[in-house]
Image 1 (tube, protein in one colour):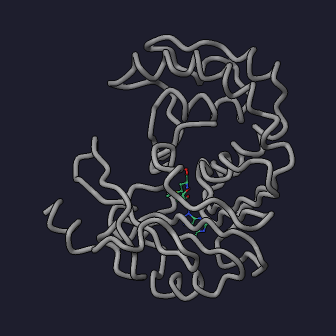
Image 2 (tube, helix red, strand yellow):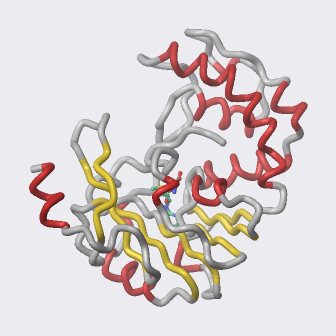
Length: 238
Ligand SMILES: C[S@@+](CC[C@H](N)C(=O)[O-])C[C@H]1O[C@@H](n2cnc3c(N)ncnc32)[C@H](O)[C@@H]1O
């Protein structure tokens, strides 16, 4: 729906599809995995209140609400547009691609992002029906009761997750490893190959970033990446 730092938009197709009727994303962000399989029962949890407020806004917004939001031109300050708080969050993320927080005025790559918001609101309005039945909660991952589901676990990365408003600094990775492995059902954990808290398998090198990283996966179910050797990927990016 909206742009977010670390979203899985480019690689969501690489992950195994859900084997259970319910998807739980304990580190929701922009929840690209749930959006791909939107017709399942979906529970999103995030500790950053802005994310939860934005999902709540989208859940209750009508198509007309979204389509009537203003276009934003270069240099416009959206704080001066008399927007609802939820609309301000949505536009604030959409005018600054890949940001960790909503912004008020677009910055350097302004043209691409503004054009994209003016187009994207039509797509967002069309997609609202997908999320009407979702449940969205403010909280920390440890608060979620265990149940049989497809758990898509995408925390701030151990190396690289420093920029989030609720960042990797507050995460105890050995405890998260134990918690992840104890989930009932299908467990999919996302990281990059620098992480050492689970035996991750490399998936794909990500380009267009200051530091090249390799996205990786751990799962208790078979996946397409189990035959790859992590050492080959480490050499490729060193
Ligand atoms: C890597 S992002 C998730 C990206 C998401 N998969 C997507 O496609 O956009 C990680 C998210 O975890 C949230 N977070 C950080 N610590 C948390 C915690 N203890 N419990 C729940 N969410 C947390 C951050 O606010 C952030 O939105």
